[in-house]
Amino acid sequence: MNDDQLDKVFKAGRSAKPDTSHAEFGFETRLMARIRAEAQPQVPWFAFAWKLVPVFAAIVLALGVWNLTNGGLGAADFHAAVTGDAEESSVAGYLTGD
Image (cartoon, rainbow, N blue to C red):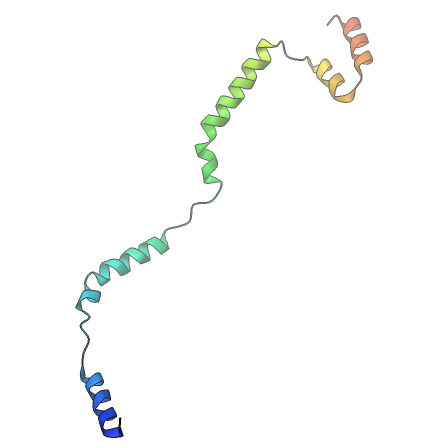
């Protein structure tokens, strides 16, 4: 291909206008939708915990009922179980009448 033919091809390419009407359709709507989507604040991770409040409340109620039905541990018994002072707790219980 010589230079004259190449120049004609380039000139024809520059003069041809592509049909962009299908890309222009709804451009403003798409642009505004994208701007709105990016402008919305992100939901913080701890907002999910509020949805779990009923589950936590049910767990607390279940543990409370279980504690009441099993007799529960007194404060002295709990302290003895944690610290390992079972003999001291039994003597204190005998002396205090528990």
